[in-house]
Length: 208
Image (cartoon, rainbow, N blue to C red; front, side, top):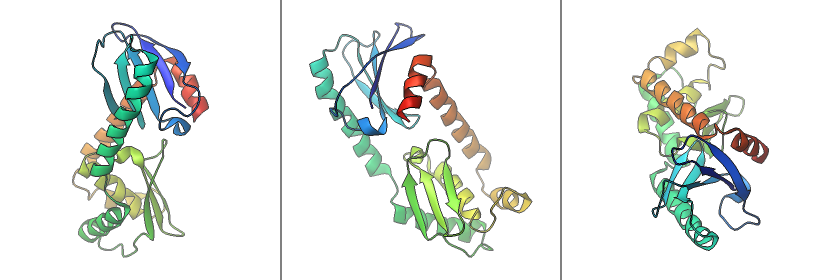
């Protein structure tokens, strides 16, 4: 589902205008795209990823015909850029092996699979019984040290299931732990700010 809302001239308020009917835009079924009609924007169109969704900002006066023509193009560009910059799942497995070898050589277990997943509540998860790791697709395009931090965090769970002293002691070996935590906290703050308008929150909760 694609959500639309208009912003005031100073971006201080927003309200939902309407929802496109039918599958006319990519990502509709994923609730991935938000289109903002902004009165501050005259001609240019911008698109960016924020809070796990693609945000497209268009001029408030753009016609529906132009909107339907331009938005899929902008979304396709964002996805192409992300695909080019995203580490493969094989690359994730290789990186985990490197991190454990360098920072926690006492952990000899390795994940059976590592996959990208659409995860909105967690950055990653690990199932120790089958040694599978899942990484949130929100980390695609994140700085390398942030992805490394989440990979290392989940890999430690292969041997230590909770966040007890042994787990924390190993995680503290990551040299940029504080910076990575700051980045993830900032990302979540931006995500919350994006969905601040109450009307939009309700729609996003329904859309899942």
